[in-house]
Amino acid sequence: MKLKDVIPNPDNPRLIKDENYQKLYNSITQSPTFMKLNPLKLDENLMILGGNMRYKICKELGWLEVPTVIFTKKDAEENNKARKGQDIEEATYLEQCREYIIKDNVSYGYNDWDIIKSDWKAESENDKFNEWALDDFPFEVETVDYSDKNKELNLNDFEDQKYTIKLEFTEDDYTLVKDKLEQLKQSPEKILYDALISL
Image (cartoon, rainbow, N blue to C red; front, side, top):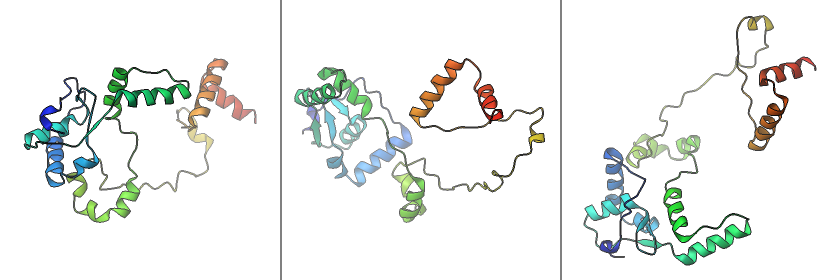
């Protein structure tokens, strides 16, 4: 699509500045075909839903055309059919466009640094991740010694001191435990203490 026909979103909530902007600029200049894999996402009025910063850089570089994908009212209808089938409230086309603007900027995943360190060793050693804007790569991984964590407890060590015990639950179990604690109207510490003492 012609770049001059694309309308930047005046309410774009996503900003990048300085060093990260330069990294995106470098990424597009070094690998322009990646734009085909991650085109600008537009609404039917050709306003950007996703890709405002890439648009800005392409304009700065003097591009005349950019890859695009258009989110249509027909797409919104398909989404509403899916929502209806899941008993979820339907949304108008405009509501879905606004929803997409936010969802396009959400990072749902996380990086498995162990896999990256082992399978991407050359890139990590040559500072490629920083160049590619993967700024939170932990180049130095601290090794923690847990060998003393399972030693037998001496109850005398607990006099006049307060300690914390961390418990981990699945989301469902957490909700169940939280509800039960609220019903019992006692502190979690008292409930746990009484339960353990009664064993």
